[in-house]
Amino acid sequence: MLQDKLDFLNKYTLSKKLSVSLIGPNDIDNIQKDLIPDEWRGIFKEKDKSIRISEILNVWKRYVSSEMSNTISFLNEFLIDVELMAIGNRYSMLYSVKNSRGKILYYEGRNPKEYFNNEQLQEDWSNIPDKIRSFYENVHNGFYYYPSKSMGLESLEDVTYLDDYEWEIVDEIGEHNLRIDFTSSYGFFSNGMGTYVVVDYKNSLNDNATLWSSKEEPEYNLNFWDVVDEWMVIGFE
Image (cartoon, rainbow, N blue to C red; front, top):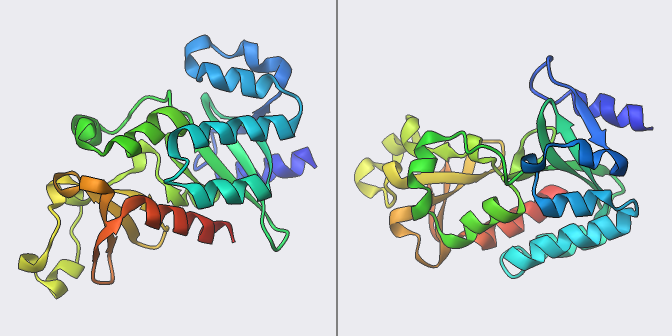
């Protein structure tokens, strides 16, 4: 059973040189002190999976209890295990979600102590809304469906900077009709099919966001967390 899981996870490491391992409670202390949050050490020394689940969901509640209330409720009901996963020398949490149809889905919660690895976003990081920064710095550096690396909050290194790309949709809607500035806009959530929940930090009061698509006209003046929370639950199902 464990080997089947590892074989599945290893299909999606994005590198044949990397392999996945799951770190047991007795091996946590072998990890260098500054590589994972201290709180993770306590969580993953716990052998009882129900306690691990409760403790990690308490972390979510501490930082995004209202913003991601539906996601937290879903995980509270359908999360069957959370484990410490190493992919090469990078550590993440592996969430095993058994949805209402009985299918087990694997989600990766990246390590908030990881190196930033996104020069442009790092330069603008202090301008990003507080709650988004808090999630990335305290809960996870991205949380998404593991096989596709999408349908979730992107890791910082993969957050889309809109000004890095040519968007054909702009020709259709007209540049003069754009209500976001690409030079200050980042797609933090991706559905994996060319649609992003975008924050333009120059117009981000009250977590204002835009649903930006490579194929359809943008939807403006949405609440970032409302969209992310709803789409996250859609992904689980």
